[in-house]
Length: 392
Image 1 (cartoon, rainbow, N blue to C red):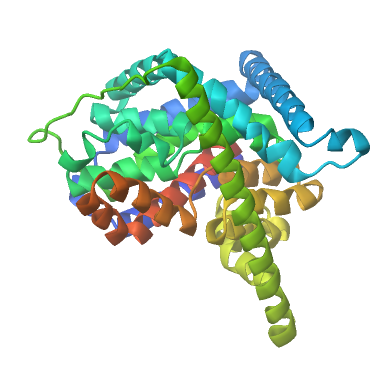
Image 2: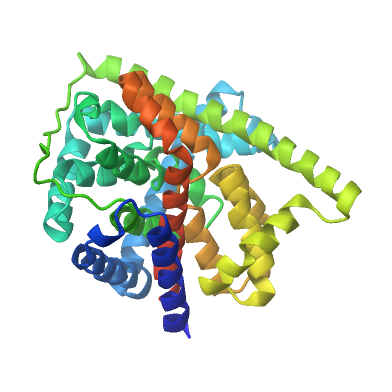
């Protein structure tokens, strides 16, 4: 049955991608099939083998430990509120991001992360035959996040074509930032977070190959340059501020979006006697069912998936955490993997702003295909959840 639903999910992604493809005749099926095989193999290893389970357990324990260390700094600043029984999402989940951001900054300063990204990207290049820049962005987005990644390619952004820019932005929106992975793990199962991060890299490139096929023969494949900060302590200070900005931005978005959803729900209940999220659930239910969710759970699952699309993954994860126990393990896994990405409406503005800050003309190009970008990154999330469904 899992194979059947995986087939319907894959078919859904292909058909929806093919319908808006820039060049349907130019779709390159060989790299797509190769990446699908690699995705399936990685999902199997991570979810169904002792090595994969042990690896995920180690990663989970590592992030749990990092989060607890980060909370120790929060406790000091906020006077040990947690010790008095006052535990909040902002204190326990968001503020530890500052500490994790510092660690990432140090790893970047000593060029450990850039080295990993470079060689993993080169490995992907051998698998899919796509440009080195495309594969670099796909891998680095999974570590640095959707806006920060473009800072490392600021010298190249102005030179890439519109087609390549779409692929780069799709990868960025389909990823997450490792700085907030620990926060995700407090809301959904760590094994699904890790699995989604890995297979999302391939999902974004597969969808980009369907929607946006192109040839690099007449286009320069630009090298990546990394500029080293002047000193370690300056880097740490900047990383502290970057992490704090992320925590504050996420908190502000949660306040705004959760309040807005509650207002819309109240209006819908008053006028139509049905909540807005339930309406969204009915709209997304067929998609959830084609991904392998039983119809009896499809409306609730579809509601969570749609909430992520119209708000962000944090809002959806918080809603999901409240009702996760009502789902079957298979449905919970499918929804969890789907939620781990930045594919939502607000990300259009974030990515547009990030690119525009580096190159105004290219930022306007991103704004022009913004909805198509969201469409492609959402298909990538569907693809990742469909692949994971095979082994849940």
